[in-house]
Image 1 (tube, rainbow, N blue to C red):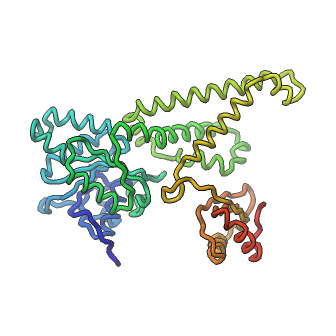
Image 2: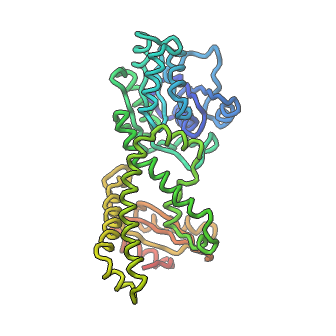
Image 3: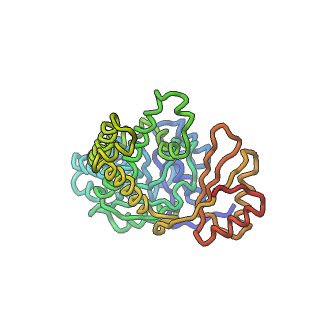
Length: 392
């Protein structure tokens, strides 16, 4: 097996062998970096070891050069303080999804002299700490869901403090680079506000929509299509983890939700105005005429949503790109999707994105192949010549 070059020097000690910790350890091991593991649960640590993420740390092992804390957010600061005290020459980072709460708690612990790190010792320890957050994850949790490629192409936020040494920042940046992440430097408070908008509130919104399905009539649920699947995809996330994340970032999340509630109230008022006007109207045209401004409010919501969606970075973090979509009917049988992808490549067309939607009650799926607009005509002609049924 070819070992990739790594700038990260080992040993690296990973504390916490859940999804992120085990994924980081797997990626480091693939690059030949000596990696040791620890977890409050001996079973969890042993599982990560058996998955190839490293070995359990032994008392006579050499001290780590870098410690990666991948513990739950509510104990991250305490674990960071413990690791700073235990390894006085190591750089310590954490991968918690909230940063300001962790930093504030860590400073409080050091000010209180936790683990003997009081005064000047605490300041020296803080110089070796750089908080970080890889924006990567899966709907599943735990070591069994870990992947060494989990961080590839994903932003990895570094939140150094004014006390962080340049050596510590460089070590964490090298870690992010080696694991395939894209390093981004932000202040802790700015990071928390950003992830409230792009990660934490979407989780809340997905869960709210999915919760409406619990008591929905079965015939209604059976009509669910790709739109509902897209909106609710992350609703299967671990409740215990998200209670901690939302609690630790409660202020920024609440601020975004208040703005969202205001927008929702405006749309709700418009829809109620249309509904009330339509009760005695002969048709919906009369209802619209009797509800001045209501349609504009609804249209504005949809338009603003489209404008916001257009700002989401495109492929490989590039500026958003408008792709053409070629939709093919794919039989739900072994090898059919692979055959379609082969035929796309044989046509000399690069696939930019792919989505699959299954037709309810039908043994076919709709494969939406996104390509550059200039390639659409070429691809459609090639696929039709090969017998594929395409939707206009």
